[in-house]
View (cartoon, rainbow, N blue to C red):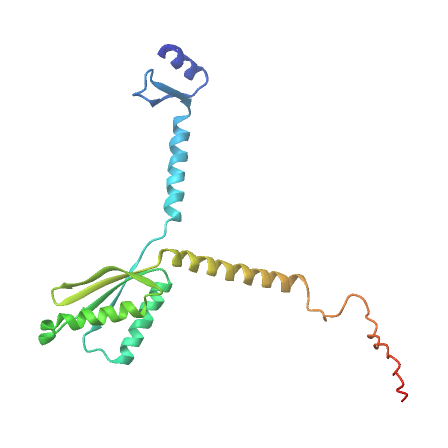
Length: 195
């Protein structure tokens, strides 16, 4: 179709003539409302952005000479962050002569990684960064989705229970039809032993 005829057809139908594939021979064009197309594309992009999950990096700082109880407390925080679907940046801070023993910090980080291995995976191995040693642990990919599903199920169940309790007031549980008492088993006559 000649370009002039296509333009006239677009003007008659009050649409725009949009070139879809300019490199094709012959070039491919389409009649469409270009403003509406741009608006719908922006809506789709906005919806996709809304559905994305923001990954948050939480930080946990440890000292090399950490007490066992304090270690358990910090580990509990890391577990909570990983269950929430957040990444955790763990920093071991060295002071004074501790800086000459980075292998102790490495062991501490490996111990923590081993303790939370069922909840997360080490994303970046321990690295010395000046006076600090840093490691990043990320939650398992499917775990965040599982947590979201569990939360939604709990909400749905709570709403269902709430709706059920409002719809039907508490009633006494009883069988629909009256039941007769069970019949006793027939007694067989005893055989007489004659000897």
